[in-house]
Length: 310
Image (cartoon, rainbow, N blue to C red):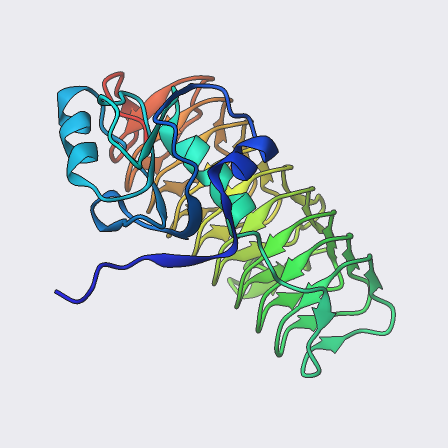
């Protein structure tokens, strides 16, 4: 194996400086104040690194003691070790991620790449980043602080509120497939007249498509996280802080309640509603409505109370 992978931090700082910037509640075992210049997995850290342990109890303590990381965030700290600090908190992974946002902040500068194409009537807020070869059509409205990746397509029927992240090769506000069959059997395309609205702080993953509404709007709620290669069909309404993993397909007029989580590869049939705080397991096919708080799995998706969180 090559040398252990440690990832340099763009804003190195002492542990004491880091703790002054964030919620430093918890139990600190050790009195060292190392300068943190890298982040690493637990088994790859060194005296410059911050890491975290996802295990508790004796298993976690043994893995922590086997690590060389200077600072380890954990739920069960071992006895003190000279020169090292263990930070015992209820949510080690969350504390570690919060720390990374301060030690390695997003440095994407506000800029519009010279190869991007922006329609003359597009409305752009302040502090916008638009990547190479992205297209924003006339009529689109892009809020302040949005980050739009390379080769993204934002149609004129799109509204992105402040702080939305759109990764590379995303298409927002496209026409979907909706056809009426005439009496003679020939297809008649139903034009899409609605908008695609992405609310504040949502994040859209690479190669995802969000189709505009037909005679309604398609809407992504504030703080929602949409993974890679997801299809959001026309007239869908996705609630606040929803999590949708990669490869999921939402057909037309699907409703998803706040904070619901869909695992990878889920398919939701047209006009189905999923309530708030529900979980839909890996690869499930949803063919009927799901109530608030239910956990379902399978094809067709059925209640599975023992399904673990993902």
